[in-house]
Length: 200
Image 1 (tube, helix red, strand yellow):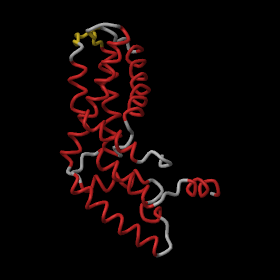
Image 2 (cartoon, helix red, strand yellow):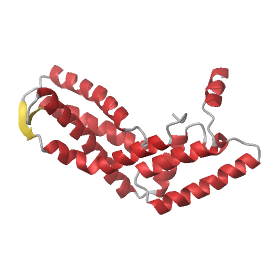
Image 3 (cartoon, helix red, strand yellow):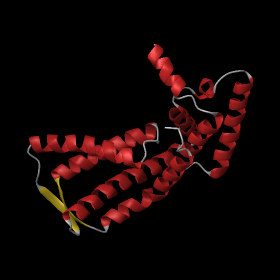
Image 4 (cartoon, helix red, strand yellow):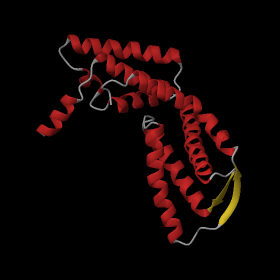
């Protein structure tokens, strides 16, 4: 119990840090600027009231600021918009994986096997589940989680005997997959730069 309290105290954030994390999360989720400003004004008022009453920002947003921001965004942003963003991020992650494979093998084509289909299906499922839940994993962690989960799917696929070639993808497919998720990735990087000092 003491360790948990100490950990929470160590993560205590200022009002400005809380607002910065929330702004980053909301912009990353594609919420329009006007709505973000309105949400920040409302949250800022709640945080100032809490300080005036002798409470901490965590008393308002809880211990997990990113989850607080995500839950508010889910309530605010329509499901079709979140679904579109999630689909774009799935394509973005798979596009990076296709591009990396072509560059590593120094080829302009990617032969797609049963293993690849299993891998990409797991990558898509993991990305969709995380993005719809929080939307704050970030590109680097998304790729890491996808690689771990996808590798397990490939091992299972090979164990079941499925490694035959299905079709070939040209290199231009990779940038085509990257393009829809690029604005969201850029928004996420800008948000992380804005909240970099001592937030995560």
